[in-house]
Length: 280
Length: 280
DNA sequence: AACTTCGGTCCACATAATGGAACCTTAAAT
DNA sequence: ATTTAAGGTTCCATTATGTGGACCGAAGTT
Image (cartoon, rainbow over all chains, first blue to last red; front, side, top):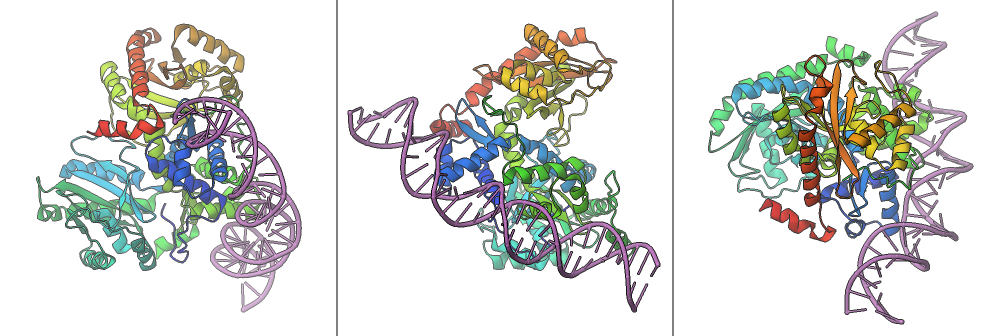
């Protein structure tokens, strides 16, 4: 139920094995955001033509990529959607968080997000929008930067220091707005601040006019599992008003944490370690 | 934009390369439907312990699997959710179909599904439920059998004969209900019938009391891209009433087909312009 | 016809995967 | 405290896989 990385591995590598290379190609295809021709991939890839070709063919035969014979283009295959369904259902906070953020969202009448870390980026796994409640993959599955979003910053603040260091090192620190924290130093200062309060804000750091208040979701033993946030705009409200929602947010985060703990999958997944942890 | 397999490949293999083996492990993990221990995987896998271990480690380092240190269990990783977002957005009918099935669903006030073939199974990529409109990954991403669902049968009926043959050969023909078509022969008979009418039914073949009418969604050149269906129950309606919806369904399917064509990047080279135009 | 671009194939060679066996580590049994 | 067992991890000689420069052929272009 989490981003593994138990700190000592630190080899946030990408390559090495064939599988890694194949996944690099997957990412490449996905990064285009539209179906691509082989030659387009070739120009963007470090791999020689024959190698890239074989990788693409492998992926194709595994239905990880789909080929449009008419247009001669490749796109990520729907086999992924199926696997992702499993990932979303068992590996994300979403199924557990859902009823809680339904309540929260109905209560505060603002957009609520649940996010987790995927590598060095924030991945949104669930969203409730008070005004337009129907959203699908188009929202869950989206990624964003960790250093300038409310959810990203609170997760970083409570991450194991080694992991946090590694994630911070991978941030791009692009200046989206005047308020964006553009250096590791500025960010770390902010993280200290977040740890003191127990929650964090996005002060128009990612998008002008967009503000949010965020709260970490932790497991029983204190590991950050994700974060949730309430987002609004400066046109409608202000930081002080959002701060007033903190108790409600904390309540929701705690409820999710707790349920996370009790959560058992159909067949008993209870481990001895868990039993112990619960007693202690 | 589709299940590739342009008929001449036919090697619906699973193994061969390392990538295939790794994906086999992914499927295995996903098939449990809950986080699993290494030993559980080992008992279910043909691979020797060391090999399986290395595959799992590779997948883990690629964040395709996530490891829960507390429970010592593996689950599909959230990197998948991110890749799947790309797959869903560019490789599925869902983004195009969405507005159309919104209309259809509001109109007929019944559950509407959009599905595509993923290998030999039906994969639902979008759903609208008139009474309870909030659904997420929990629905999109689900899979079902091809031989006893409305959408599955209409897709088979219009598939290239070679591909259809291969898919039919992979069906399990489990008898879910008295009405289930339990043999390739019975199914092929049904497919002929579907081709004659241009649409198909699910006559409680998968679940007692659940019926549907389904219609293929084809591309300009006649290839099946997917299917859509209106589902209801025998308690509320009957097949004749569903059949009366056929014109409305055809209209929707045609609208999707057409938009599919226009949305298609006419030539790889022009795609950016088109995108720009859409944004502006 | 000569040239270019693009997708696809070959094959000697290098790398990465394999898996049996040995080895830790934790927990339960004696 | 000592033994046993089971789950999990590492080693390394062997072998299967993947690599990529060169080459092919079709479809356009000049």
